[in-house]
Image (cartoon, rainbow, N blue to C red):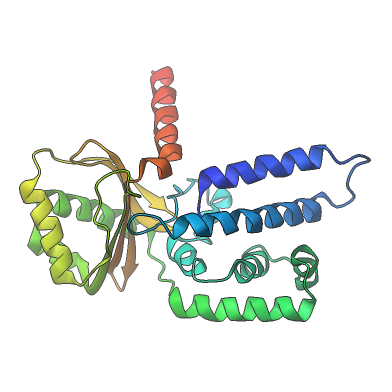
Length: 276
């Protein structure tokens, strides 16, 4: 609903507090919590949209690193490209689509949550689904192939290897970088293979430090990378793949959006140290 890990955690905490304050117990906890969380999210989205209007540069949802356990990995359904498509919906359309199409909640229950009649909610879901299908084509990539492409992309972009990059990029590839005004990032979306190639070759030529690959991962359902860039900043890179070619590159450098990634890496490093 929000595209923000930290805001989602705040919403869950608020919902838990409200649940704990209800006297006498609740007959249907799942329905109660779904209703409370959805309404809290709708309220949050009003202020989030206002902040988004003054956001510096491209906005990308906070990267969610996929779980190694498929049963725990909701990012298999809620992908980065889906999140970007959801941004174009109204809050009510977004809620209706997610609750019905992703979580499988009955329309009559969604109607009670949103305070609308069932017919109106059905129309919200239909409009949202049509828009999502138009804006968010889904191309599944085998995990091994995704990992290979991501690692090869890192090496080619690190070295400024135009030939290797050209073999991986679609002609209509787009490049998106989110620094949020906090760190250096290209503020505008860059379109087309030629421009994207010039960008990577130019950065590699001017840089004094080489980036470090920390790991290849799944980011919001897409092949991706976690790395330390040439300026010694943590960043994530998600790659949208279409017909074996990279059709979009999404880089998040905004430190505010990477706190949970940094915490995850620190926890894993401590765990590895303790095991040794």
